[in-house]
Image 1 (cartoon, helix red, strand yellow):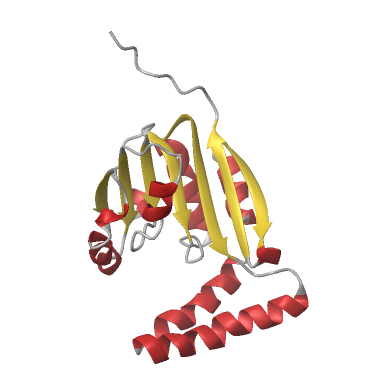
Image 2 (cartoon, helix red, strand yellow):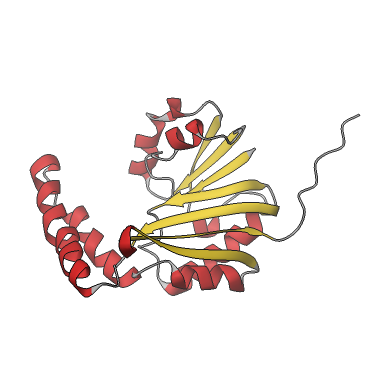
Length: 195
């Protein structure tokens, strides 16, 4: 099975994919950041399948159309604006095989006002302090709360996926502190005929 890891970061999902029941032949791990791609090289042992690290813009990538069995991403959506989410949905539709599936999860703003107050304080204040104490850098972590506030949840992306012709579902997780959209491309996967 050919898996596409979009906004793959440091390869955090690879060990989970490896432990799953998915029979992975090859992973195309796409990330625009040279730093993330460099760190990901050190995590290549996390899967039994072949991993191709592609330092590319996911919105303008070299993956062939109709080749992916699965597209997955964790926590890579929040930095995208609506126009970019529209382009991303079209790219996912382009690279997925007919009948193939996708899943995207992202931290989100919980709808409950009481929980939202404490959760956003945690993201905007506590996480940057922890980042400064353990990494000497609070700037990158400070952006987490800003991006999450603007992104809100996966509902807009679910809508864009649907408009791109995909079957897309939406679910809130952990009382809305995270949300997920998943689904598939319509059509039947045709297996090659063996002689």
